[in-house]
Amino acid sequence: MKPVVIVIGGTDSSGGAGLSRDIATLTELGCEARPLVTAVTAQTDLAVHAVAAISPDHVAQQLSSALATGPVSAIKTGMLHSRETVLAVAEVLADFATIPLVIDPVLASSSGTPLLDLDGIAAIKTHLLPLCTLVTPNLPEARMLTGNEHPELQAKALLKLGAAAVLVKGGHGDGEMSIDRLFQSDLPAAEFAAPRLNTSLRGTGCMLASAIAANLGLGKSRHEACSLAKEFVSHKLRQAAI
Ligand code: PLP
Image 1 (cartoon, rainbow, N blue to C red):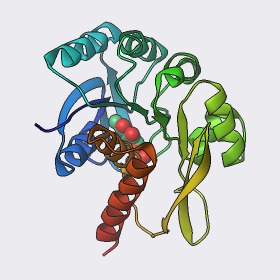
Image 2 (tube, protein in one colour):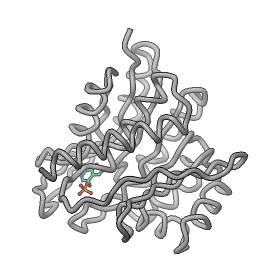
Image 3 (cartoon, rainbow, N blue to C red):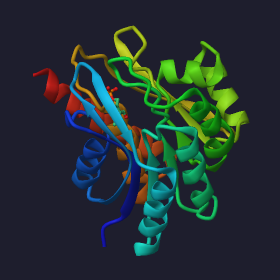
């Protein structure tokens, strides 16, 4: 049987990011997706024009129903939109602590529109991070979540908040290589590097977190899941660059 992965996030009418990326990634990696919608966005590659939120109660009902449908191998969160939705998701997930949880802390679109309010960021820190197997911030997200500039200190702060592991992604950095750094409290830090490519592929954050969740669902370790996911996204970036 294919591992089932629940993905919780927003839809993107441009098809570039969000749930459609998650589902495509999971399907390609041999998993079955159970998608839950937190918000419906009207956006192009250049701008977010409108966001319609699904009520937090309804998100909680989607999540309870998805969990009741049958065994779940991993869960991934993306755009959560508001503090109330973060709290609703965290409340349900608190009873399912054994299922690997990957948090992609989506704070804004590439075009600069916030996709989570400030109270939502605080709620992720207090309510969701303590439940997660891994959180995958890019550098701006890690800065917003911790107020720190340095990946190691950012990771330390997120581990202190209760995350079991932190992958600080290097895609927004500079240098010839894009280096993602994995920090786990009881293990040495690990690095996953790939040549930096000049492409404008959207949704790579969604893709990476979904690929990690898929690999955790397939029984891989955190380290292996991050390594395989980095290679998966790098391959997609190379294809997009051709
Ligand atoms: N829209 C939705 C619904 C998303 O989930 C995300 C990212 O996860 C984005 C937009 C942002 O994607 P991008 O950084 O490619 O703009």
